[in-house]
Image (cartoon, rainbow, N blue to C red; front, side, top):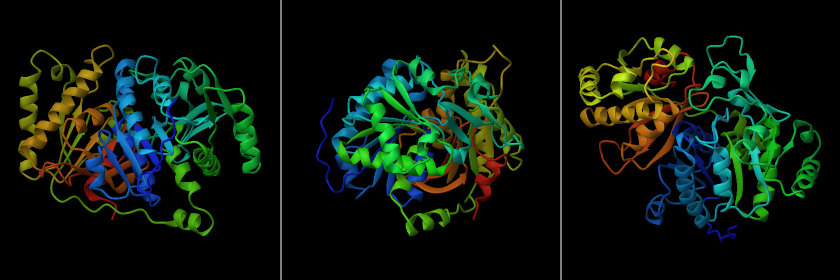
Length: 450
């Protein structure tokens, strides 16, 4: 177990690793909107990079652990954990998708917990279930989630019966009890703090937590049904982190929400709740969107994107023997209209069951295509849909970080790209997961909300 390092006054207190890029930008947005000066990096920053940015309250690393096998995941997270520990952060947050989709051999939350635990001296490992603003709820340890903006009735499903996540092509959620889900990934002793424990005051919640910690569990899972639960959790995390930093927290952006809520009380909290979000202006010039997501919601959003020239991408040809020739043709079909000032949406065609190319290979092909598009046409604003696609595509650009500009929809943020290359630095970029955004999201990316 690592020892607690002295923390300089300029060091960030909060650090997070996003297991994909889209989720990492959502966490960035919540921290920035709470008034915390936050920067999201694509790799752990060195001292020279940090020295150019001044004082930061929080930092993040946008990664791709959600799609990694255990060995690669451990290697990446060892570097991240060591870097965060060197900074002396008080809260180390492993940011997962709000639906917790993961598997023992792909994006294992258990591997992440065991790896990062080596850098966290705190006795409390907190797993936060649920993110109410995205209609994700954890009740008696079981996870529930709405199906997206296309469900007019806003039906909430137990996650193992969710119409999309129960059938995820790589990490299907076939178990709703998050304790069992984590046990299958090697986290043997997960104890529950259920929603009834929030009924009293902070002292009562603390007593329930301490009683469970006395038995030395691997982690405590916390139910979350509404923001009042997040406030209580934020105060709890702050108290424990102050005793013995760093503390490891695992969950969606709700961990950052809890942390931010705990910092504000009384009039500050009331002001934060009424604070207007920054507005996104209309795009200056043509917009390019690359949609590698195969989710039903993204399919609806593609159909609603009437202001774009739509260019279909065949997954089999993108990953086949003649992929380079095929992508060269698609590149011309995309860059020509962009140069003429037209908006272009390139999307991967949904394949009949059993006929699709390998998803990792497809994500890499999408990343290569984006790199070529931006090498051929200078753009001011782009969008990428799909968690794995976003992670690989942005990493391929050679930029080093993102900062927050404005929210676009629930769980979808527009950020500013930071790069040493002038043609990329300052570009506005929207990253979205398959389950996120309104039906007209891609149209909103053009018009803004200002």
